[in-house]
Amino acid sequence: MFVEIAPPTLAEAAAATAAEATATRRRSVRGISRLLGRGVVPYLYLAPALGLLVVWIYRPLVETAQYSFYSWNLSPTTPAIPVGWHNFHRVFTLPEVGDSVLRTVLMIGLLLPFTIVIPIVVGLLSREVRGRARTVYQALIFAPFLVAPVASAAVWEWILTPGSGVLNRATGLKINWLHERVPALLSITGIVGWQMLGFAVLVVAAGLASINGDYAEAASVDGASRWQATRWLTLPLLSPTLVFLLLTTVLLAGTWTFPLIDTLTQGGPVSATTNIYYLLWNYGFKSFDAGLAAAAGVVFFAAFTGVAMVLVWLSDRLAFHDN
Amino acid sequence: MALAIESPLTDDRPAPGTAGPAAVAKDGDEVPGGRSRVMTVVGHLTLALLGVACIFPIYWMYATSLRRPDDVYNTSVLPWPLSVKSYSTALDQLDLARLLLNTTWVALLTAIGQLLTSVLAAYAFAVWNFRGKKLLYLAFVGTWLVPFQVTMLPNYVLLHNLGLLNSLSGVIVPNLVSALGVLMLRQHFDSFPKELLEAARMDGRSSWSTLWTVVVPNLRAPLAALTILLFVNAWNEYFWPAMVLQRGNLVLQLGINSFINSVETEEWGPLTAAAGLATLPIFALYLALQRHVINGFVRSGLR
Image (cartoon, rainbow over all chains, first blue to last red; front, side, top):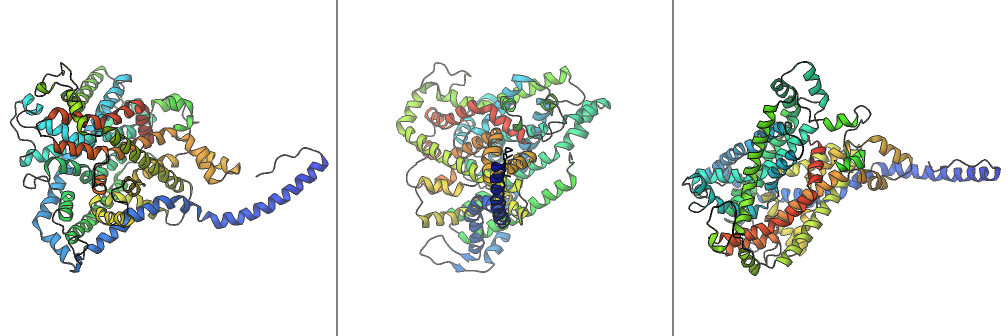
């Protein structure tokens, strides 16, 4: 390993042999420490990230699971009273929980066109367009992703203002977008969709770029029409990307919508935009019902784990793999 | 593209021998069934319309902010005559220099910290086989299953006990690991040519020096893309800073938000000016580095 080719003089050859001997000894010592170390090394590289995960994600998760068996109002001076499964019982019987779950599902469903359908169309059409124009389109569609939620809330509030906002004035509609039940839900998902579209388009572009061009060539040689090739070749090869987008939409819809709900509608009107994440926030920091918030959090965590496992299982079964 | 020419390794395709550079560049660009003029026109039209629709709210934000206070309700597409009155009103009430400095500092440290922990973890996953690898990888993926609202309260209590509430470190420390970073980098590290790692080992390089002298320099493009993504995320973060920094609005998003809440709701000029100012640095960064972001992403072959 460290032995260089020795020049052919005797003295140097002898020195080289000696050096080699020490090197061998050193190597064997190194070998032992490497054997000992080999098992440890990957864990050392993982340690910083894992340590942080444990402290800031999984420790709090466990603590939340503990809170869920207590009744506590978050105040350091009042003791937490153990209540057994009572909080879980409330989670499953309170009608507002069921309503918020339905609304969450609805929001996810309304987001899917933005995170899957339009990105596929954009991705396929982008291949028909070349050069600078394509870069410009991509940049325009990606730009909203860069706008901070606080800023986009301000802009959209202005655009959606009933009397003077540009949307109603341009279209002649008279809708109070943020203060009527159905329009408010549509507005929130529309704004989030507008922000996330750029991200999804980029992911689809990445998926399309990773499809081997040989397939397309083979299809052309076989005389496949454009539509046939897209339907039977491109889309199946893209399916892992689409499952990834479905999974991110389902899991992260709550995180994406939360800041906009909080700044624009505060869950209203009449809780028309209260999804499960906003409900958790309400329980914890508005009703100061830490036990109920924790129990709901644990239930939602379990439910999302289940959904994610089903999706991953489905993608393994259905995905049409390149290799 | 320029990066790919500089170093062929930034291209993730592991077997350059089997496909010439021309074939690599054409990958994914190849339209099955050939090109047609009709589809090209349809493509241009659809994408241009969508692009305009996407950019319009952002344009409208800057257009409104640049109108004279009397013209704010004007719906003419071009804001004319221009005026910076809204900006001066917003700046009178915002300590912009301090907010920018604090936010840059927070976003930079967060992004660098996340990048560092992600590089190390992704390297471990890509290079070694070890006991519990799958489970530990799942631990990273699993963070997406834990809603922020679940970890918020215990983390708040811990920060309180550490004495980090109302400090910028309190914003940074809990966010030093990014699951997205680990997942994205692992893809790149996995497809890194194994022969190069083997060659470095034969040279007697330790795994540590292999990482910094062989792997990282060859993956500059995706690392740059990820850094920008993490920086933007940290810059736009709102809720955690809002919880930690309850005394005083130390970062930009909080300052803007409290300004937005403090002005009369009908003062759209200063409001859009403040929102525009909060977004401007990110747009500048993006325009300067746009090629790297898109390329880094598209090449990542996220699957």
